[in-house]
Amino acid sequence: MNDVRARFGRPLRLGIIGGGPDSWIGRMHRGAAEYDGLWTAVAGVFSSDAARSRSAGVAMGFDAQRSYGDVAEMIARERERADGIEAVAIMTPNDTHYPYAAAALDAGLDVVCDKPVTHDFAQACDLVARTRKNGRLFAIAHAYSAYPMTRYARSLVRDGALGALRFVQVEYIQSGLATRVEEAPQNNRFRWLLDPARSGLALVMSAIGCHAQHLACFATQRAVTRVCADVGALVPGRVVVDHVSALLELDGGLHGTFTVTQAAAGGENDIRLRIYGEKGLLDWSHRNENYLMHAPQGEPARMIGRADPYLPPEIVALGRTPRGHPEGLREAFANIYAELARERMARELGETLPSYPYPRIEDGAHTMAFIEACLDSQRTGGWVAVARAPNGA
Image 1 (cartoon, rainbow, N blue to C red):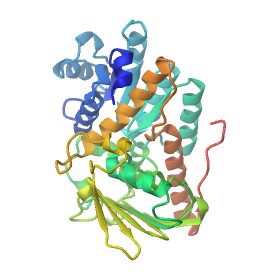
Image 2 (cartoon, rainbow, N blue to C red; image 1 turned 180 degrees about the vertical axis):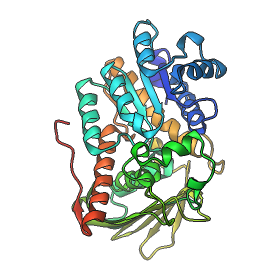
Image 3 (cartoon, rainbow, N blue to C red; image 1 turned 90 degrees about the vertical axis):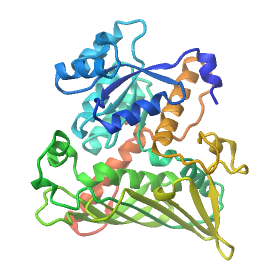
């Protein structure tokens, strides 16, 4: 698994953008990046306030000289070092993802970015173009597509276990906005989340809807071609979007349904994917993420567990512990970081580049086109085609 790491001789150097001491997503990214010894976080910008960023870096164990006040300073200073950063991980408010990613790409750095990758489709196409122009790698933190069992679902679909695909269902249900949080005391996070200018074109899509859309497209290996969507708020008087339901059509005429909301009282981060084909069903739920249910037509359903001995080696390699020991989100994040690192190391060594299915900037562009199509569908009251990124983007 780590042969390329041994040949490369050292971990890659990572700069962190965001993810201060109190940020759970920051701890998730840093822990995942360093999980397999393929990355080491050596520098960062941890707050939009320069003084707070520098002190936060020191408090988190970073070298004071590499705890920077802003992103421009970090990029400039790290370029002057023989041991400067080789990539950045971006986990800041949504409206900063695009400028930080663009600056990193233009400085010759690879990027791991939280979702949504940009504010809109045009910005995402620009990042696709910059990534290609600069010969860089760009991963998006859609960790649900990096669980062993969602990867195996994709493999089974690809190998024809379901036959011709007929229908796909994806949903992501949460309760974080089920109450009038707008009327509660506001912290920094809620202030930007509840500001439509900062959180994105549709809050629920930026927060969780993009994960659901990407997972459905990833597992079926098909893009969404058109949508008919209901977009709005379930909580009366709410300005930001907390709910989207849509009918989907994907490549090849595959039909589907899509439902996401953050306003379902009692919901608890429940993402579920079901894929139906002429030969049966695949069913995966984040509530039971180490297992995939395969129900062939006319046969008993089979519960497939992560690390079952008959699984393909590349699927088994995505897990870190024996079957029966639970694994979860951190390991899935780590799979994305590990795949990006191995591809980068192979490139540096002049070796044949591996083909890893981690989410890339092209996936992010498709997500932004999907979000815009859902909003256009709500406005027009009918089906809307999902734009495709230009070939040169």
